[in-house]
Length: 233
Image (cartoon, rainbow, N blue to C red; front, side):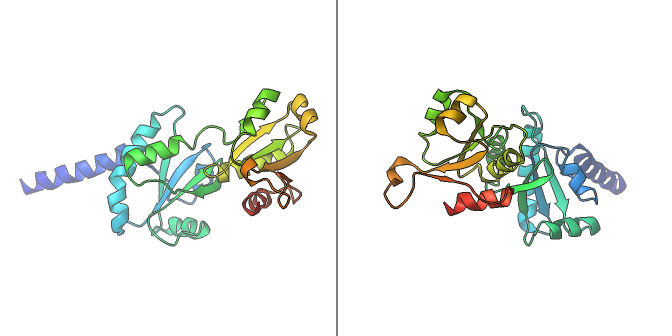
């Protein structure tokens, strides 16, 4: 009887592991695995961590729901006590457990600063999918965009430019705190006089003779430089 009971417990544990909708990325191929997804939430954890144990069922529920979302949003985990997991956690600066980070197209995008319950995780991550920068196609679109409190607009005559690529990466990183838009419309470029430029527009309430209402980015064409420019201004 005891043997049957133990066997049943082991079967339940095994079934839970097999049926988990949380992807286990604790292996040496972490970077390759996250690169398979446009956006993914990763939990860095330790098996002995009490906070991780409390998060686990909520994280699992969220993973099951988000797996069925349109588009699907995968949730993964990395065991920071495993051999390969230690290296991954060190690479991404994990110093406490659980640590949650959002990756986009294989690159670290931002820390997860949302709730730790299933409903909260679902809502937060659904807000993370889709474009972080709105495409402006008409002059009317451009005029409406400038009514935001603070907005950063990329003007690109070349849609495949390096500047546009880095701008969109910066938009992904700061999407929670700043509004972004971009355009390649000739009408908009001509009207506003920008071409292959990134411009930060301050809200009208902050306009003064001491602060320009708009500031053009002039730094190196790198995500980090654009991000710092936005934070500084």
